[in-house]
Amino acid sequence: MVEYNYVRLKAQHCLLLQLMNNEPKLTQLLELEQIEANIFRGDSRDIGSLHVFGGQVLGQALNAASRTVSEDKFTHSMHAYFILPGNMEIPIIYEVDRIRDGGSFTTRRVVAIQNGKAIFNMSASFQKEEDGIKHQDDMPTVAAPDKLVTMESVRKQVMQFVPEKFKRYLKPNWPIEVRLVDDENPFLPTQKAPNKQIWFRAIETLPNNPELHKCVLAYASDFNLLTTAMLPHNISFGTHNLQVASLDHAIWFHRPFNANEWLFYDLHSPSASNARGFCLGSIYNQQGLLVASVAQEGLIRIRT
Image (cartoon, rainbow, N blue to C red; front, side, top):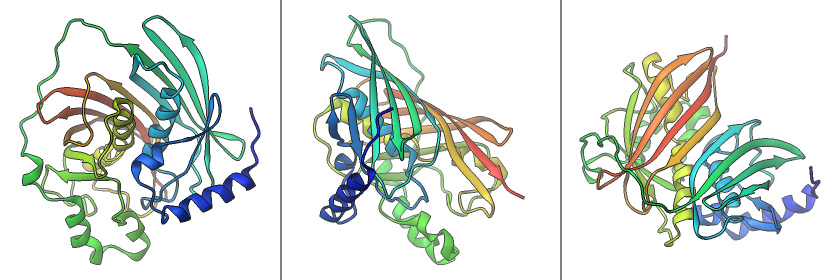
């Protein structure tokens, strides 16, 4: 494994964040610095969590892999494991292994590294566009996003009731705009079935780059999954003595989409056991086309 000068990288990282007023845009966050042919460096953005947001590592790792693939192939799936919590104070190094370049499919493996240790591992597959059979599940009938309450308005309503130590989780600096289909308060949950529906889109206007839009979807797909598994148990991220962490994450990209436009996320948790919650998600565009499917298992541990 390659060793890096983390003192120098940290200094560069701090300078970069100062230049960006400590709040890099999502495209800046996902756009990695290339150090070698197969080695990239990424910085982090604080969205209120104690560690690097898992969706950020998903999006950056997918970007690193994509930049080593020919332009005639597009991501069709990615499978990732979160190994260690990421430290937001130092850069993340992404090493890409060019496992195979085939005629129709290309395979890449990406390892994310901090302080000489792997914190994340991902395999991704890329495919040329092809014609073939087509079918999909129908999108559920739900209210349009412009008819729904914004997450920002929910934050403002509950901020005065949230203990001080949990207010960092309500910081209004997410680069993804979210609208809740269900009339619920995600920060003060009530017991219900493990199903959730939201609309989301990028706040920043994204350029016309299909692979970048997939990186943004990967980033946003990590929101709301594990909280869906918590719904039957009347707990949330603010619950006392609760330890939550993503363990693995998979995405299959079915059809082209535009992350500047609203995307509908239909979430369900079929199972929770052994301190783990398993969640599935289907993502549709506003025309009802299924553009991606998501699966994740995460740690949900209530400490005694």
